[in-house]
Image 1 (spheres, rainbow, N blue to C red):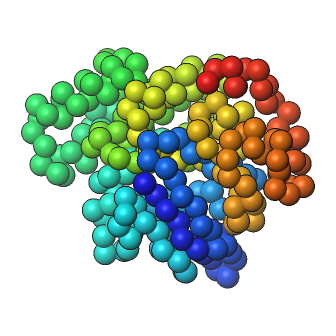
Image 2 (cartoon, rainbow, N blue to C red):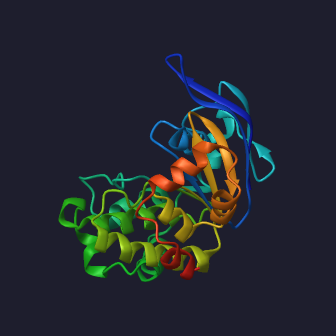
Length: 250
């Protein structure tokens, strides 16, 4: 579904992504992990067409992504960021309906879609008429996920979507998200710093460091056949990882 071909990107002379070649399989959940500044979020922004590469090409479903086609491509891609990115002056329902209204959806179609997504994400219907500040952190992230799914995109991008939540809310939302991913069978590309979270969600894990792909594969691949000493150091640093919990839920 997504293919990066020798992609490089710099900001103010500093390299964020260095010659990345990477294929993201259709209907798979792929987790991008690595330390801060490794290029994870930059790769998502490239897929969204928010920025363009300095070198290389990006392909989505067999079509090269260019700035001229980026707007059309965004309609096929849902995007969730860490704090949700909701418009604070709009109620949850209005945040959800904005894109559909621009595309000319009828009020009935919008209402039906919102009802379907609320059921899917276990979001309370009475919360739809509240402003983001009147919702809990977990509820805001559910609205952000609903907004990303509103147009039924082929690809779902998530940039640290659970990073700002407390552990109990995060665990509940993790369970719901995994159920949603399995049910919808979208192509999912998610960024996380947490290896345990990557193991819990992903079919494929991509470890980045200093803008480069260090290793791609299952957790077992990374743990038993590390491509470099950095892979082993990164895994050992994840002291919260409990393999029996994460792999047992697969």
